[in-house]
Image (cartoon, rainbow, N blue to C red; front, side, top):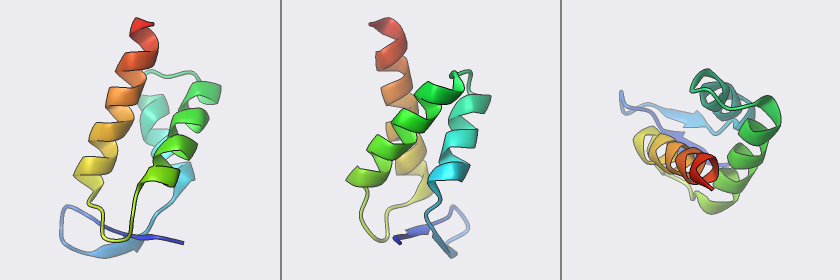
Length: 67
């Protein structure tokens, strides 16, 4: 698994499930949230910060809703 950097600077293992939960709380349907989190998981590298991950996730959500 990939380690990411939290806002506090602490390293943590990336969790697609946690990301999916954040996307659901932002208003996405569960299936869409899982799809976005899987896509984002494939694109991040070690040391990516959570701000970038959330930004990419919410951008994908906005793009999906607009289309």
